[in-house]
Image 1 (cartoon, rainbow, N blue to C red):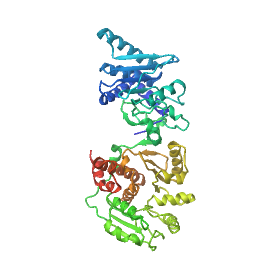
Image 2 (image 1 turned 180 degrees about the vertical axis):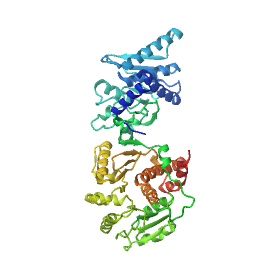
Image 3 (image 1 turned 90 degrees about the vertical axis):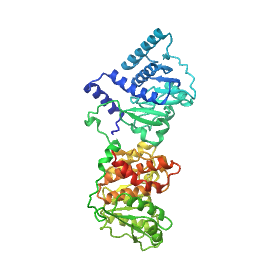
Image 4 (image 1 turned 60 degrees about the horizontal axis):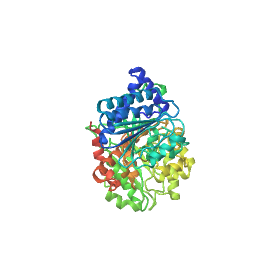
Length: 514
């Protein structure tokens, strides 16, 4: 699924109107009905609804939603802000339709369940109570500057209320991509956002969760011309795209044909990282696994992961010496290895001499962050899997997630590597600068060792001859899916990293299911 900019969304709207063909008013009707249907599915006619409509097309959507809810006996109060007599053409049409609806109701029944107030100067705000539903239709994707003046005051009034808030397309005041220079307390804080056809990039950044709330993409039949004008660097990954990437295992497969991976993991006292990563690796279809680890971890690893072979370092306590990895199909380095001087030197020697596909994670990333020039020695198409703190070691701290993403893209393109920014909607950045946001995973996975599990999954797929980009995207998706299946049975709070490993078989099965 593409993630388009605000400018590209206008192109898609115009293309749909011309080529479906459909009038802009009827397209607005379609979008409004989709939102009205969602509201009817979640809130009963007993819920008082207060709708705030702006002067543009987002306001036109809001007016149409008011009429549709009124048709099904919801009690609705609508406030249209028209302080400069500058309504968009479609907003004007829906204003008249709402007035006509009121008149018909009034004539037929003597009473109308929709109250309509057009605000041209002074605004007397309605009382917003805990049982109310506010529908925010002030501004949509066309907004290009921060809200101020009266509209900012309305936003603050909504945010200060105890009412539930639904935003149409985007929370009013939020830019679709970059909010670096926005006034953040002038943005509606929605509980639910119903957005049209495409996710918006800003929805995927953690600092915007308080504004977007829960969000859902509504299919309203917009047509992408798929020309240069709507090319994008940003995509949202769905199951239907990931499913064909999963290979079918040959009936004649044997352990020698299913890949041999090497995992460099664990110092004294950190064998757990090696265990989690190794178990995940073996649970992801790998034929053979070798673990490079110090003598201090031998007993616990042989008892915990009997399927793996151990390659024992000369140092009893840490990874201290590089070794020949030419016999392995893929390598991962980092989980629990520490950052001792011996390990630091062994790390750079190891990655410089290794030719097979590799994953660099955890302490290996901390080493890179302390020796930034070494990133130039990484083989092209290496995979780096940092969480936020590890990422900042590579790109420095940033003002917000948008800037963080742009710097990460620049680094990935410059070094011709893959970088995974771990977190909700984990972002996979490829050497061409394309970004794939993942759709699986949940807050229960914010637990120690989850990243080690992911490293093992990706390593396994690399060793099975998946291309690095496919191994990374598929690995992240399966990791999140296993976490979702585990959380469904165990709860977010009860989830630990071992559970993610244990649910990996179910995740593979679920991904194969139609």
